[in-house]
Image 1 (cartoon, helix red, strand yellow):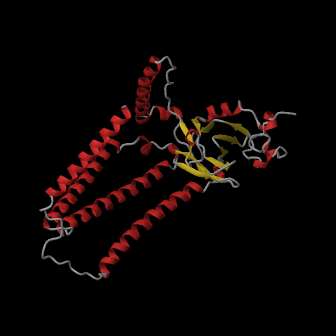
Image 2: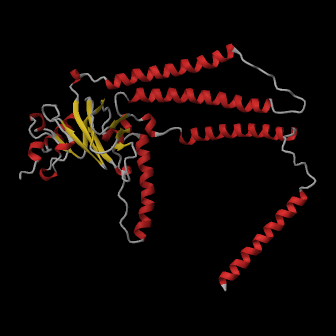
Image 3: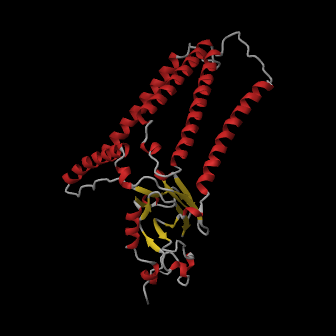
Length: 356
């Protein structure tokens, strides 16, 4: 009975809508149904273009006021970080100026030269001078940005061996990271995924016969001494990953079957970054949200959320699988003394193997 009543109600609604459509069509019978825009239509569209231009500028201003000062943009923690930030700011300023001018001209001309009865469009076949101007200016600007970026990139990638960089391998696999330190000799031992042997805990495929591999140290946490250059060698066990360390302005793909590298010098310890006003406020806001959610969980009899504490992170910036979002490693930047104390407590590769 309920089903039949539902069908009757839907049928009645359908008939009512059909009748309303017929009445609307009859009411419009004497109106102009021409598909050709008249002066009134063109005028309305012209003013709508100006309104949309105002809307674009309004949203832009609001975005700058509310989200223009992002902590990550100004709080780099590597020697080359400020140069990357400067390049980013210059690029954004150029884009903003060009966008502002072009959008204004686009919408203003649509308003000024709106269609009017009796007005004929000017046939303008070509203008070599104008075409030269709008071609050469973008070429010069883009060439300048590219050259600036190229010099910055070369400064980052050219590692000076005389600086005695700390050599660390970042090993990626779905869905975790491992770090391998070169040990006292600062030379990484040979490794290959075909040499992985889980039975004796050779999880990274190190060549057990290579003398340089004996003092290598494998960890699940990345410790870096502040002020010392670090040369990262990167491998992937399975798929394409991307080692991304946002606060250090560092990113490099980890490609199966080959070794890639990246280098930087950390300049701010973890403890110092935690005291940064921007970071401090960010952590405070996160913990405020967590406290509110914890109260809801406790009301249900569940465990509260842990308090958030800032740490540098190594992330994967490639969508490498279903648990990609959780592929991260904590990075701790500390003094040389603290780093030396920590590394001395870690087990060397030769002592970590399981003897069968």
